[in-house]
Length: 358
Image (cartoon, rainbow, N blue to C red; front, side, top):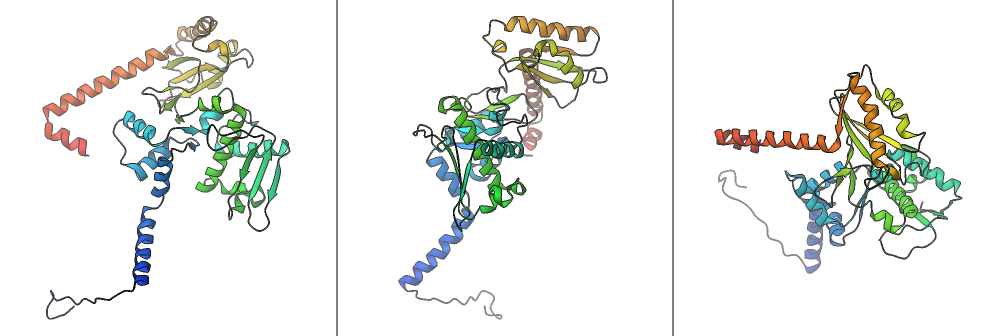
């Protein structure tokens, strides 16, 4: 630049050879691709319609949508629609781990990823797993005498589940002190894939597909059902909404004690999901064919459950209602809120606009 003339600019023009042009273009491409980053992988997964496996993956899906696809939509149904268009099948290993058909199969009642991975390692060892480490590259292969779990549905099934660690990741194997690697993205993904492979080998392809597009929701008795407009309960069973609970007189331990005639020493299971106010919860009796929606014995079990709860109502310890009644009340409250918001927006259009943008 010329100090006496600020508008003056000095430019140099260089003539590059063909090799120089190619080298410059390669540097430019590398810089651009580094900015694009994982979006390339996201687009490849979408293009090739690969199944996605997650563990407790609702927030992962929200983050990936925001980071790689588009800003999050305002409506849940729009979010589900985008996911359906992106991926044919999404599996959540936490949903699988808490399903009645798989609960406890690894030897633990917990469904957190570290516990599942730890017990899977024990299960493989007890089954006579053979670990082979290739010299110098840290790869590992584990073969177990179970039905195979291929990556793509519909491929031929062999007679072993095989886990292979990529070169350079020897620290993720059991010999490398794998437990310390939890909550790092690569290791969590590795363990999630192994757990899914084991579950799928146990279920077989057809039954495994029953769990497609069902995502675990923390602090909820419902699953996010990507394939349908409405969501479903985590368990197929009898559900009641308990509210106005006097927790000084009836805590969770007391409630479980109350349910013993229904549970019949493990014949049936229960799930208790407390709501945010800590004075209400969803109770689901599940784990047995006789509580399924079309079971002949269901009515008798419902009457028994309601009779037990009625006694607590008489003692002013709680109130209860069917799940359908609870959902209807929530929907009506949401409609009233929307009508009030619409009325406020009509009374003050500028204020409504500011709220929407904020």
